[in-house]
Image (cartoon, rainbow, N blue to C red):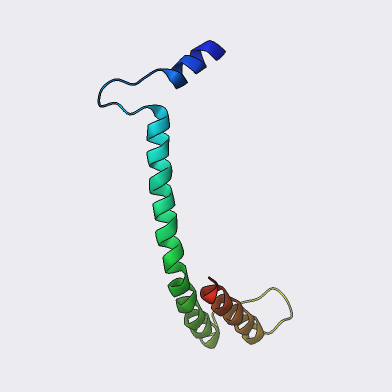
Length: 88
């Protein structure tokens, strides 16, 4: 079993057929590119969440399962989202 797996790892691929390692490296590269693009958009998302939370609160669509006033929770969320959106 080990020899079979080892041979699969070290065997060269044919022309035009990427090896498993090359394929995984390309997949990782694409994944990291997507992650970087998402991270660049995160501040915009966080900035958009604050007004949305305010609007939902004002329309009475937010419910909480504690005794804390939703106004206070939204204010806290706004502050934390704003801080997170400004983080380097």
